[in-house]
Length: 375
Image (spheres, rainbow, N blue to C red):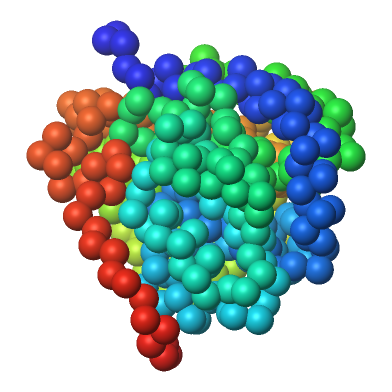
């Protein structure tokens, strides 16, 4: 097989996750000092980014609790006053692979202009990006650089997404770094590339035109990213969707036809699983033909018998929280997207050579904000 950046960048993640933990360990006191100095417990915390960088926040904020939100830069830039309040104390956490997308740079600028008391954490994979350079000497900002290899050369964000997600979790769990490192090592042990490839080889041969990823809470954010990955790498040859298992019944289930594949990311939470398994049983028993694929962290006979394809990451340690299981799930989804792309004869490193979609967004004009009233 021709060497592809994208495949290399997917496979290197298991090593980069441990490197990311070590980077945060090295900066632990600096991060703690910055958070304490800026009274982070009494601030609104906003994770922001565009596309996959937005989905970092969407995936991890449900697990962080408190006053932590995820808001896209693309929403903030077009309607600043709906999200940035002059009299609120805010930590803006900007996630960005390149640090050069127009909306990311503009969001930081808007926050500085609108909010009286704002500080910044910039989680980025590019030391030479505008986000890192613009704020490197700002005492109200903390720049956290990811491992250099996470600045993906391929079109799609893979290792950049997971390294930034892991960092977002770590900075608010500084007293649990060793525990989280153990959890991540167990996740890495669960990821068996050859076993996943056997399933993926079967899935990519099926006559499928629509794929739906389903996940609850943190895993809904992961489902969103998984859907985008396949959409990007297949250059729109397939229709990709995402939802929560409970939300899927409320209209979106209409997407199901004879060429629909539904991939469910099962939760490890016993209460949550009850709702997810109910939907699996419902869909499996319906007359309309579809392909049900279930990914699981447990070993469930019930899930297996109500799926056409069932894959478990279980290796006798199935108690991890979903926010950590997301790393195994997205790894599978990235691999699936890569091989599905190749099955269409597409170059996964450059799925849109005609330039309508680019590695770093182009064509965005940023306008001066005059404090107009938004609604």
